Image 1: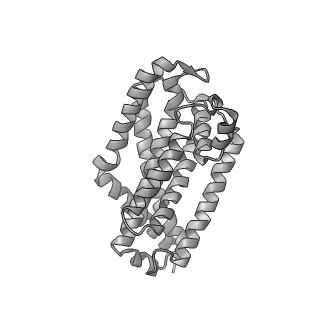
Image 2: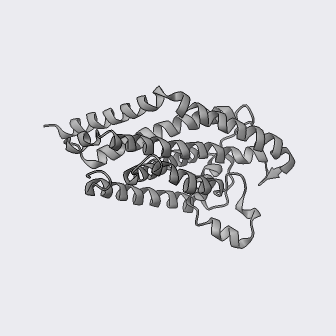
Image 3: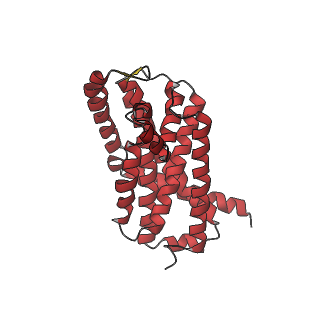
Length: 258
């Protein structure tokens, strides 16, 4: 038996299912973040931003564009995997994956790529919307794309872990509401941490989202509160840790084999 061919077919099947799933309900998955981000641009970028003036040498709306794009990527990469894998458990067709001759890394990769695809699509839509409000200039395409993809992978993995432990639909909304949203809003999306007192600057460094937002902002604007190498290193460390933890959960059948 050609195992790699089997693995490829399994991977493609999971990814295709994931893409068809969120595209079939695009009114719920693609349209809402587009509308929400447009409101952010209008309210924070135009109405409030004109009163704030410049930040780090850029107009306020230019400064917040990278953070708003990445915020949409984070939320949708996470939401796609957590809702999809939890539905797989709830509807009991996770058993079909468990008995199939497919390793856990293939299953995990399929769901993560599905989440990254949705995050990427939403990120592109939000970026296009931003062009109606600002003249977006890219400082480094390679860094921008790298941070974009790595952040999407990271939060797709986080969504997978949430789905493994979730026992009800309430459980998959707790983390986004009480953890993900505060981390995102306090991650430097709307401000530079240089404006904060030194104590709160140090506290902000605990927030992993801060590193992603600043690395992405450096890719687009060329400015960052965090050293780029440090930011990329933090992102990669989290990806490795969450990947190993996710594979461990699958191999032990946590939240699945019961």
